[in-house]
Length: 139
Image 1 (cartoon, rainbow, N blue to C red):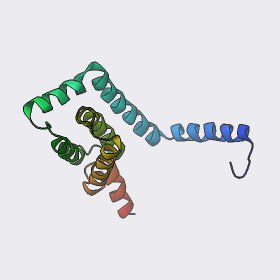
Image 2 (image 1 turned 135 degrees about the horizontal axis):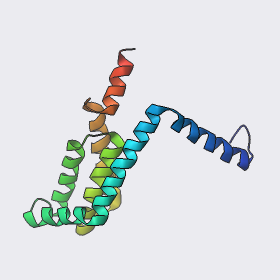
Image 3 (image 1 turned 45 degrees about the horizontal axis):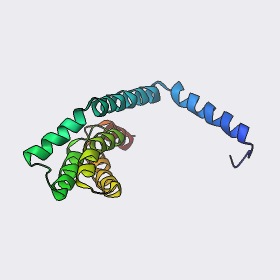
């Protein structure tokens, strides 16, 4: 946009960049995997599975107070380490119902999720990000 301030040129360049990303088989695999996991999590939320899990956690006393809900969110953020973005998505979908139920702010939820999910993914090298980092170390 800086080199050519025309808005039509910017739109065309954006489309060209997106096509370039999908032109790489590795990038396409990562995007398809992310879309499939995101669709599965959205299906769980829409079908009522997440609401039932939140109700079960509250009923069993695991997350019956705001403090317990925050600690459970931190624990889930540390346990689910599939991939940095997907871990944030999975933890957020589960914890959003708990935070809404207890009247906690979404800003606090975002802070807890971001400070637990993403760092764990880089520390535990059993995921795609870890493989990327290890591959870069050996070159």
